[in-house]
Length: 340
Image 1 (spheres, rainbow, N blue to C red):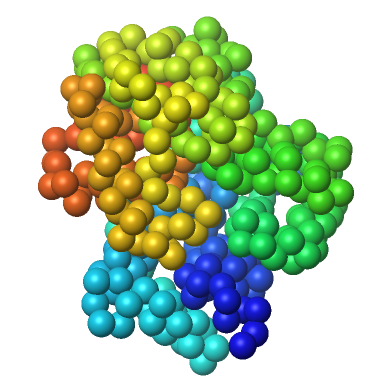
Image 2 (cartoon, rainbow, N blue to C red; image 1 turned 180 degrees about the vertical axis):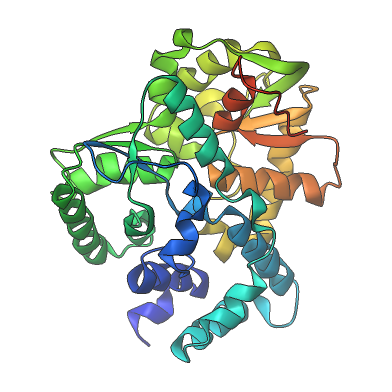
């Protein structure tokens, strides 16, 4: 038995995609960059926007998880599904499996587009590497492939240096932590300044006039890496409280650093889909006890999990939005853009 046989097939599948195609789904880099079409983002500069796999491939990841959960309840099981996907890759039949998860792509990258809109309103116009953006490789670290992660992080840093990039504005919490902390601990990235989108927005929030187009009651779910690893607890709340027409209501105990997990992250949902779905449903129940009609969070994985929890509970009158989207919909001077 090899070391690889000791790793759950779901994690091996995602890790192999990073190694082979530089993203967790193994799709083309051009497909991941489609969200930025028409935005005329800069190709050069010192400050760049890091989109990350989660937001760029949101609908495909959601479809993949739907397939995994169905397989987990079938005779083939999750391991069989992931081994099948790996076999297809070895036979160069990646497209067959990817077509199964390639539906509902219209909303891919919407939080990214919204973030760029907000940054530009603040006078910040970052560059974007598009198809040249590397995967942060954080999953390699979390699944124990430290030497592979160290090698990958050196390559990422070299690509940033070659472009003259000195500052990164990142959206995905896990990517932000990987680029800011893990890459530096691996001996790379010492000269790179990495900030999360909500840090910049919280500092400049008084520069914006924000009014949501209708009065709503919302609640906020803290992504684990954002609150526990990056320590960004008050920043999202400061932003939400600055938006007129919304009332922020939160669970009494399970918020901030005490927020319970939605069941996603680090490949957990691919390895333990049944437990992951149970955690998602429990978290949704906690959040909806507040009486909110909108759940706001700030992580693509959390969005996917919370929506899965709502679907499993057959709740149709509650929406899940990224924080960047809530702000973009609230920008005064923009045409009403309420996606409810």
